[in-house]
Length: 146
Picture 1 (cartoon, one colour):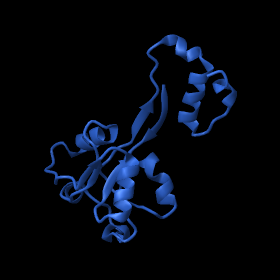
Picture 2 (cartoon, rainbow, N blue to C red; picture 1 turned 45 degrees about the vertical axis):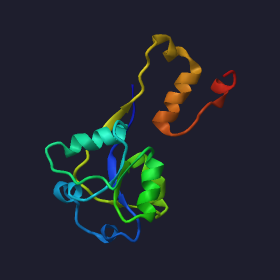
Picture 3 (tube, helix red, strand yellow; picture 1 turned 135 degrees about the horizontal axis):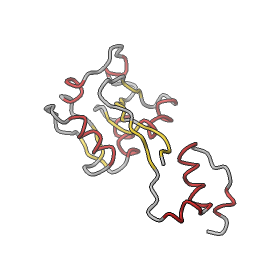
């Protein structure tokens, strides 16, 4: 079941020169810049590597295990980072990070997958899917017996 969509975004700290740019960042400039990225094998890194296919890319400045680590490094470091839009939206809204307009990354659907059909009938699992779809918990009583 599709529960939402997301895409990668380029982020910089407020003092980075790209924070004031008014033009759209293209693939050649992005991929020739050393970036702060997620570690190989993560979903964000897999999406990034798919986008960079066919381009020559600079070595990353850092490869970190979480989006939070990438964002913190980017906010207080000198290199741009690439993370999930959903992960960065709060820090961008707060002004701690600046999203750089970029024409490289596409939106991707996020899906919930059940390996056992009976899970579709379980209230707790359905509640988790609702949280993923809406970002809000509607009925916490589904978790009471867990």
